Length: 288
Image 1 (cartoon, rainbow, N blue to C red):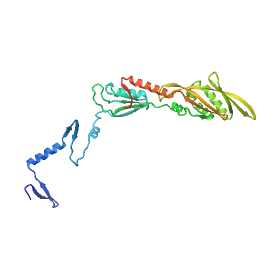
Image 2 (image 1 turned 180 degrees about the vertical axis):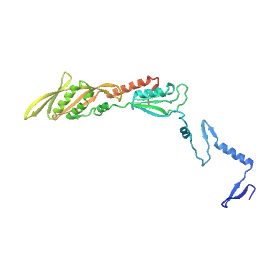
Image 3 (image 1 turned 30 degrees about the horizontal axis):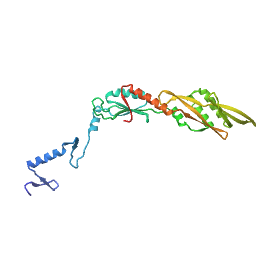
């Protein structure tokens, strides 16, 4: 056994080899250990060298949860209407470090409430947000769903009857009477049609009732106007619809075409953007 080693017998009779270092060696080992665990700065980057076999534990979240309250605000809140969005953004945000991003395609407004500071260029975490999505109303969704889709005469009549509350011009009663007439004339043969000076289309038909032949006329408006909310909890809009038809084999098919419905949606969402700006926040068109 040399000067730096001796043997110690443990309780189980095994021999543990111990190594002794002089003060100089111990000092060098300590210096190396400190150097390995010291934070190193290199070209603007920060590094920490950890000896192999060691495990890193981040206790930040656990310590924060143990506290009385978080150190900063985080999370995303989804609001159900524009008024709630504006109230929340005004309560939680400040104009100098809040941007609102408006996405017309997705119809969303996103307030980043801890954005990069626009006054002193301080960086922000950008993880505290409020989001509002302008959802289409049920009634407008229905009209969009059947837009430009030909329907059999009776199906079209039933559609009008079910959604007559949205028709404002001509009056709902007038168009309802047209729908009821179409339902009553499903077994007739339509032979001709012509456009009238009063803006309606006249269809001539023949029918046989109790073995007796007869003829008749039906007048239908060439266009009508619906008035409804475009967005849930939103304001009402008027949209014109052109009534289309196809006559073939004595039968009629109908459909309607909404006049620039996409433009109406864009205009309605632009009104929401303008309201968000009234709170004093900067509103940008884009995605956060």
